[in-house]
Each structure stands twice: as C-alpha cells, then as structure tokens.
Length: 429
Image (cartoon, rainbow, N blue to C red):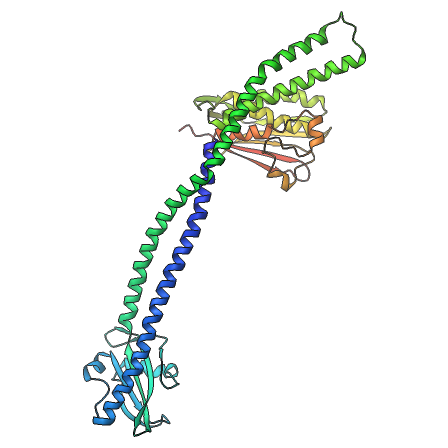
C-alpha cells in the first residue's frame, strides 16, 4: 500500500514538474516565434518604405510607374499616388474588383504618418477566393526639393503569414515532443526526490512491524501475570494494590489491542494483506456483528437499529470485513449519547455494497473530517482516552476499505451526529 501512496505522490510531483517545464517550453517557443516574426515584419516595413523612395525617384526621373502590370493584376504589389492634400489622384494602380474595393473599405487603416508602414487588419479576398493580407506604407515623392505627392504602396504578405503559421505549427510539434521528454524527466526526477522519503518510511514501517511483533510475547506474559494476581484470593492485597493491579490489567489489554492494530496497519502498508479470493456473505456477517454490538449498545442505553438486505455477496477477506464493521459500530457506540439511536444500514447501491452507520453523537467538525483517518488522531482526546480509544480504529478501517478497492467517507447527520459511509464493489471480476 505504501508503494501506491508514494506512487501517487510521484505522479503528483511529475504533474507539477511537467507543468513547469511545459510552461517554460511554451514561453520559449512563443517568445522565439514573436521575436522572429517581429524582426521579419520590421524588416519588410523598412524595405517597403525604401522601395517607395526608389520608385518615386524613377517616377520623377523617367515617369516609370511604381508597379508592373503583372503585380497589379496578381495583387502582389499595388500603388496609389495622390497630391499632398489627398484630394487629387495622380496615379492609381490598385487594380479592379474586390481587392480595390477591400483596400478602399479599409482606407482608415492606411498609414497616416509619412515614412511609416503598417499591416491592414483584415484579409482581402479576390474574385478567385484567394486571400491577401497587405502591408501598407507611405512616403513623399520629392521633385527638386518640392513634395509632389504622397505615394502609397501595398505589398501582399499572405505568403509570410502562411509560412509563419507553418513555422509555428512545427515549433508546437517540437514543443510537444519536448513536453513528452519533460514528463519523462519529471517522473524520473520525482522518483529521485522521494526516494529518501520512501526509504525513511520503509524503515519506520519495518520498525513498527518489528516492535509490534516483539511486544506481543511480553504483553501476553504481563496479561497472564496480572490476571493471576487478580484471581489470587489467598493474598491479602490493600485497596491501593488492588487498584494498581486493575489498572495494570486495563493498560495491558489496551497495549495488546494497540499492538494488534499496529501489526494490522503494518501488514496493510507492506501490501501483504491476503488476496481477495473468498466469497463473503455480507448479509449474514452484518446481521451477526450488528447483533453482537447491539448488546454493548444496550448497556449504554443506546438502541442499535440494523437494516440489512438479503443476498449481499462480496469477494473479500471475511476477517478484515468483520473487523471493519466492529470498528464502525464500536466508534458510533463510544461517541453516542445515552437514550439515542444508531442506524446500521447494509444495502445494494448499483454495483456497490453500501454500508452506513448513522449516530446521534457530538458530530465531527469539517477540519477533523480530514484527519480522523490519520493514525493516533482523536477528535476528543480526553473522551477518547477515557473510552479506551487508541486513535487507530478509523485508520485501520480505511486500510481495510482500500484493500477491498472501496472508499470511506465521513458525513454530517442532520441535525446532530455523524454518518460513516462505506462503498465496496460487489463485482466478482
């Protein structure tokens, strides 16, 4: 079981490491992509402004138009030459059709400041459905130091955008591969990090098992000795001696129970609990345990009401399940008030066996609900000790439930008390 515990921790650490590595990889990929694309776009902007000046000189010197007829027809390079006030068109090389309409539709996005360039926000589609994304630039046309007009030029950047998205896709594929490697590395790193903890836990678990085993014989001897002292009618003990012997008997029994519980928990931690091969008649087992604990409850003035369905069959360890039921019912009896009732329900819920123990005791706070399954934890320490509680019962109960691949929950019983709910799978596969 402890291997499963640390495997779960290892997986959680792997997710954390992989998340950190993945985030770093994405940041690097998008930072590199943004930097490269920004440099390409800046270069194209500067290049288009320089081209305007070059075409303007040729226009002034020889009247050569800025764009060829082929580039205008294909929409790859367009030009628009107007007077400085923008009211008179000197040269119009925007072509015809949808591209021309699209450019004028986005006239407000044309650069307004001279010697600058900007991308038009939207794509423009021609008659064939081909997409064009234009970079627009404007610069003055000088003739002998006099500004003759403003020349706008438009360069189709769709090819660059497609190449950029293709590059981004390839980068993301590389990032996915790196992320897979990061997950593997994170899993390896998590294993390295928790290895010392696992060794410490294994040593602690081994110590608990060894100590519990070594304590059994001396405790058994002590129990026999104290019982012998109690039954020795020939000796004349003082009242103090009798009380001391009674106290020794009680504490010896308590230590014996503690030792047995620790051994059970150690076996559960080692994963050496018996295989679940026996078919258990849970209806008979629940009725028998309920009848036994009803006598104990009656001594405290508590009514134990059992509602057990028939034909409840479960693959499991009968001794462990018997102990589970005793722990749940015994806890409910210990912490219930006099003249109250405990409801014990065993029924089928879909493909699960549902066990419910509902008491009318003092209840458990939300904070304590997360800790009641911890070893040696007691909700009411003073009362638990007076009742003979060891703080191991629910921890052992959880171990048994997990052994049977089930789950155990602590719920509130309105208006007062606690509900212990256990779900165990009835599947025989």
